[in-house]
Length: 142
Image (spheres, rainbow, N blue to C red):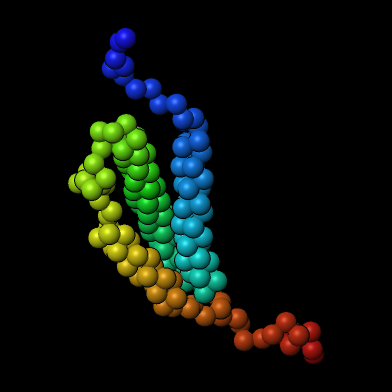
């Protein structure tokens, strides 16, 4: 009898990819909603710097979505690898030294940046364009 020297994963890899895909779609949707909220506030208040705010929000959204998606992917990959090690008998359930670090400081900075963008977008409201002093109905009267 020969010993098995290799292990082949019998699970369907598309199942894990589908989970990552759904999670990333959900995360990107949440980040997009938060970005559109800032843009909507700036545009509805006719903020003088709405274009600058929109450009910064796009950079913020890209950084946030990338950071969250990368962290989620790393944690899911680690959980799958850890499960494989435990099922094969080579893993120690108490050993979690190789868990990916969650970037809390980065997420705190991104949350603070989002709060700053929200407050900046609500900080000013430009008055409507000045009219010539006559209303359209005044011009019709003689």
